[in-house]
Length: 225
Image (cartoon, rainbow, N blue to C red):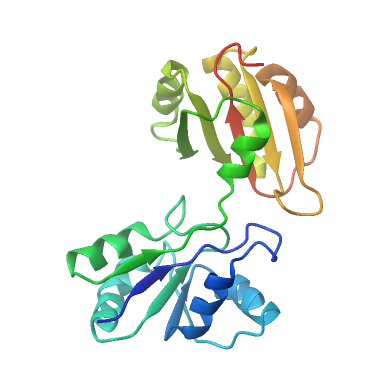
């Protein structure tokens, strides 16, 4: 029986990939990619020639059974997301669960993920933290914010550029404007930036700034500035 490999890919800087990850991407029968164009650029950079098949949130339910059957039939596969570790706010959970149900081995390689460097770089306590990922866009958003307001741990949130200002404003309303926060964007890239301050201060900074790139918000415990 074959094996499914979960292979982390760089979140920005293409040098942030392990030698083992490169070997696996060369050796497997098929690479399942969230975006074949993004993964294709990575493979081209490292001169890897291998087959790619789209595997993303819009098609994973449709092709899941076929993928599991092919794994059971002997095809080793690697699953990659656009950036970072598959299944962390990216597709992967369903496939891993089905593989385990069918006794198909799953091996996850260690590697890049955005929230770890953002957390460590924030300067906030990292012994205990709560990873929220992406907040709901509409339904359930306020209930999640209320729950976050009750935790005494460092909080990690992923956000897109066009929702950042709204999210900072809402966090200020629910957690308090003086709550400390560090907002990291474009991690490992040329224009990497981390802005630190209170929620009120950081909201004012980004309110008048054009923002691009992937964003990680790290919210400190009360009084951790």
